[in-house]
Image 1 (tube, helix red, strand yellow):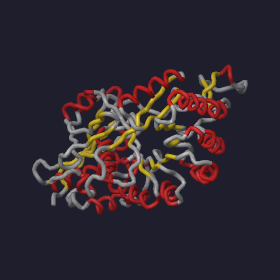
Image 2 (cartoon, one colour):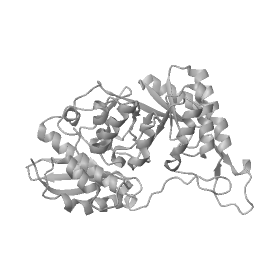
Image 3 (spheres, one colour):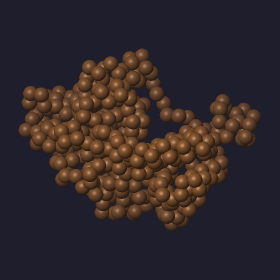
Image 4 (cartoon, rainbow, N blue to C red):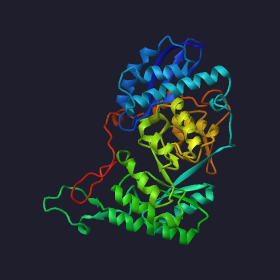
Length: 404
């Protein structure tokens, strides 16, 4: 087997938020790539990869499980988002190398495909109900089997202007306020409108993005039950997952959860107690292919499905890792789609192909995707990459921050 000789990071995308790990070996031309992207902490993740790298130099690249377990505990504290992301980039790259050594795609190494392609769900949105309906119809025409529906941005339907709310006389400066009751009114109206216009043929989802207080989250799940959603996404924050027991007792609206999960203690009870229907860990945030294939197997035994998280901040390498897991997992449910600009696709030859609402891998050995370092370098704007990025800061009328 090949031995690891070097591990380095390649930072790309215009704002520098994509971090691709390249693991090189002592075999001429044999290397692997993996995703260690973090939209908000790219520089921190790069530092973590560089800190971990010396631990693996000289080790067998093919001992993936042992390498993963070694790195997990190498710093004593574990299961953090930065460590998981750094670990995932290395792990994906090692699977890429393993596939290349074997001369077969990773999905063949993992047991072979159990489906022809990977169904994906689209993201439809509109600032008005008519705009949303038009966007849903557009994705239906493209062939997407499942479509997510959002009224404007995350929390849309729940935002009120300053004139519509009762604010303190010393109110902090923010342009709008999130209001739970407005959300509980407008989101069911949104689905009432869509079902009236589209019927129950289209499979529809919605992302709460954890904005609601827990008791109101339970209420929303009950209110949406008549509209037969494919799933309701991120109804609760990771800190409040215990409330899924109340949700399960109250209604049958399918639940999808997990894009902020980084610790087995978060997803294991939800799966084993059958409190959710879809687990949505991002492959890189879960620690890579090695742990996520175990999540998929756990899901199978308890009748839960996977819906690995993507999102607009993600990169084509993480997407390809998810697709390989999707191809082999009986517990697969649906895959979140992701679009990239033409010049971004060009920097990643062998990327997954998104067509007619389905993602297609290729038959090349390993992950089947590579990075053109020259093109990747041209994507990067050093000035923009030097800026710090932060998650949107939504607040309630009194100034309280809304998670996430």
